[in-house]
Picture (cartoon, rainbow, N blue to C red):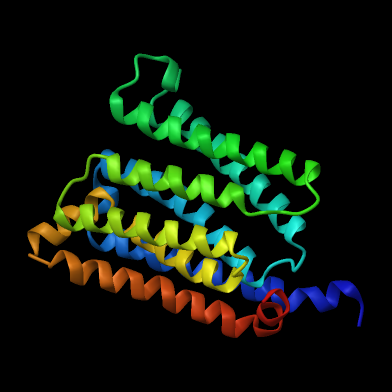
Length: 246
């Protein structure tokens, strides 16, 4: 069997799982009316991109390259792409034509500043993995700490949204501790929980939970379960890779 044929099934499974997740969360947003007003639509994209970065880091760490330095290089590239993509989206879609340079409001400064930090940490990761003999996971710790400060300091739209963001910060910090300790599977599980929790905290979901009197802790538990179930699916679908990385 040639190398291309050997790599095709894992690539197909990754594509299928990615498409399924994107479809399900987008359908959930459509069901609560996210795309009926521009501010809520903006929040959808503003949550989806950081969540995609967190989830990608989680999946790469759980079932990606076994070599730690290769893993950090992939994460660094993803962080740079995500940060730059967000800033371009803010400049040309959310607040055209100058974005952050055109009398920005507090929320815009908050988000663009954080995504610029993500890009900067991505550059840092790419540079430090070249300079050091081993990859320490310090970039994940920096990003998780910054993410926790970002989500807990952010204005939220309702009680469930506050809980979702706070819980995502907790899981991100736990994930970072596992990463520094070299526990890759545990990092991935906690980071996927953080990603799903962060996604659940956007405006349209906050309005939905308030309107239907959905209890905040129940909401957080449901989205935490979603992230953990997705992690379990990845570990089962890529069992060989998961055993290889430990």
